Image: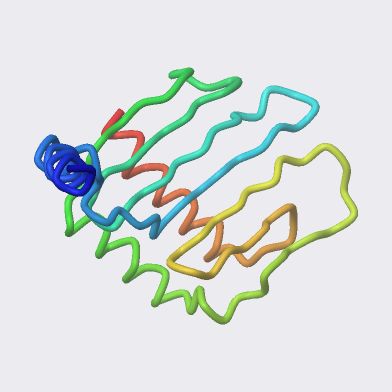
Length: 137
């Protein structure tokens, strides 16, 4: 009897779409605080196009917001990452300067911490992700 109940309950959960369709985070961008009014937020984009924005401080939209990116938009981010050779960039960029925000950018399994001194092409990628996502909010 327990097995029948467990089977029926599991079937119910799956049919109610409680389990996500294998969402995997493939892109994320987080910007941290500084001593001033630097925007603090995180964007996470999943393989199926679902995305989450969490605005914390000094942003136009505070709170959690869900939005959707097209396959083409995600593909374009990947193309730009490939073009700048993202996978071979350093894992961390740092110069001893005070009061700067840090950005964390992840494409697939590669994550980069950018405090200061990163190449312009990395900043361009971060800004490109921002521009796509801000249009959706």
